[in-house]
Amino acid sequence: MKKSIVCIAAILSLAAAPAWARSILFVGNSFTYGEYSAAKRYQSNTVTDLNGPDGSGRTIGGMPAIFKELTREAGLEYEVSLETVGGMGLDYHYTRKLALLDRHWDDVVLQSFSTLDADRPGDPALLIHYSRLFADTLTARNPEAKIYLSTTWSRPDLTFPAGHHWSGKPIHQMGEDIHAGYEVALNGAPRIAGLIPVGLAFNRAIAVGLAAPDPYAGIGPGQIDLWAYDNYHASLFGYYLEALVVFGKVTGHDPLSLGQFERVAEDFGISPAQTHALQQIAHDQLALQKPIAAAGAAAAAR
Image (cartoon, rainbow, N blue to C red; front, side, top):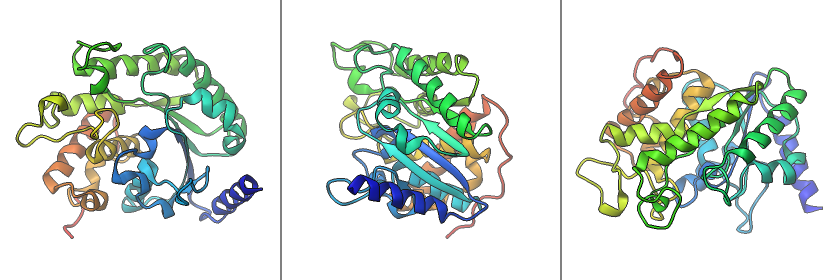
């Protein structure tokens, strides 16, 4: 009965969206909902958590709520929904949550487990299979739906300590390997519109010196830490960068158009200089894929 009430509430919420709003669904895990950061509960009232309240009686905002705020600032109308479960890949969502997800969406962002396969790190087979199933199922509902795969970042906890798949390799290697797995999935599913290069944006932030490459060794002067205290999930800087890349890819708007006094960054205590630097990283990474809308005038100082 409780699950039925949650489903009905979610449907009513979507039905109440403005007629001109574009619907977007985010499917993922803790990398989408912002574990170990203030992003997890951020503006949860502005998005629809299809799973309903958790054991604490609260719903999740996460990166989708950050995306929602960025689109609002850009003058865009999106009705944002999310379905997330910690530690799970797309196989779980397809086999266990499809009843919540199989409906008409304009845009869908799919994010799978951070190592591609929890049991076989680096193996994209599950991602390939289930991303194609999702794309086929959801485009059957709406042939015009744009389905995106969002790649994930390198994990220091699997790179610097011994005994893991990426141990002893450069910090950027895991992100590149994960991105390559997503590329295989993209090439095998013609109904998928493209990749959102979040992991490569993390790599870029490290390469240009904005972010520290090894949080175990400390954070250098003027640098940021992209990871949370577990060196696994993202920090507020990391989730903000993730949202910027998703925003730019999905909407086609330049992240730099948001300006250095952007509201989410202010809420998170990110300085104007850091905000601009992160927006520049997102802009530069997306520019490697295809041109995005030219940056407008910087947001007015508030």
